[in-house]
Length: 184
Ligand code: ADP
Ligand code: MG
Image (cartoon, rainbow, N blue to C red; front, side, top):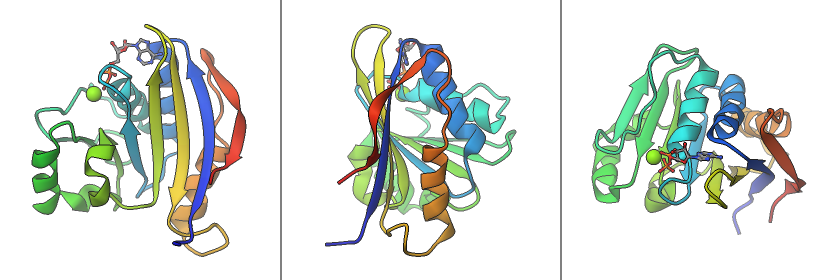
């Protein structure tokens, strides 16, 4: 089996503002090369999360859904922010094969909506965000830092991703669900 590290924290958001605020905290702590993979049904809040992440990075342009553009890049923030949407998985795979994969990691922060559809095309080190739709305004967000290398291995990114999640502060309108820790 591949060595692996996975650390999880779970949150309950009671409003779109709560989800944005949680994502904003992630954006404020984000580092160059960070990849976020988002999964959850239509309307779960993936784009809402992306909007908050952009705000945390200091992006001033409006962050909208890139469903038809495949990727939007925002450069007004602290780091470049590359926002992908793999709803149309065939097109997204072709797009990544065509060279867009250089935007995963690298100098910026990349976020992929519907990531499970193109999972094999994405690097293994990532912050996974699973959003569950509980009621019209309630969402459960499970954030997992996953790395192909254990923390006791090497590499800047490993430790940085895990530290980001460990030290993430819970914003108002969001409640942490107990059970944070190492994941199998
Ligand atoms: P997706 O990109 O997953 O399809 P969007 O972010 O575009 O989802 O849409 C989420 C919708 O759900 C928005 O209309 C948003 O206002 C609404 N919503 C209601 N409560 C929440 C919440 N707690 N978190 C995120 N979105 C919420
Ligand atoms: Mg969306």
